Length: 114
Length: 110
Image (tube, each protein chain N blue to C red):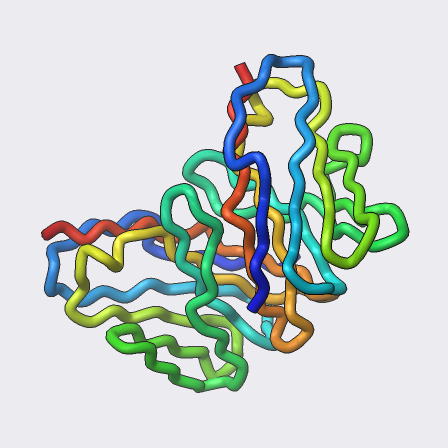
């Protein structure tokens, strides 16, 4: 397993501002992902954070809104830009083992936009 | 598009009762996973099923993978308040990406 630390754990932000979420893993991992979990909903994949190159975004998510950095194999950031109340969600960092694609998650960042 | 349909979405039962949660798809998955998520935490992996027809037991939890690898079930025997949480099934959709079911919010009343 992997230990994943995410911060902040929660934040309340004004609309129009941006928030950067950090994800630190205790070991080097190849695959890192960012998910969004809207209130009462399941998880939706935002993007795959690629080390040394641009992230790969899923349909409905764009780099201008959710820029991602992955400077090395243990760290990644997700920025939620120009926030609106619709961005209020839990954002989760995840790493994946290559065997059976088992995923390990950080504790999540609960974002409220007012 | 690979989708996982999970049912029921909400379930509230009394302590000691049994329950089953279903996860169905029209697509074949190489593996399916079950996670449990508690408030304020990320999902935690419970089990991975890989082989069609496979049954895995984890104490009072029994997981089954359908013969065609398109569906799975989670059965809890003698549910306890500590089983309360959001249960999620997930399957790989390529490049190590997971697709998640809608989740089942389970409440066990003492």
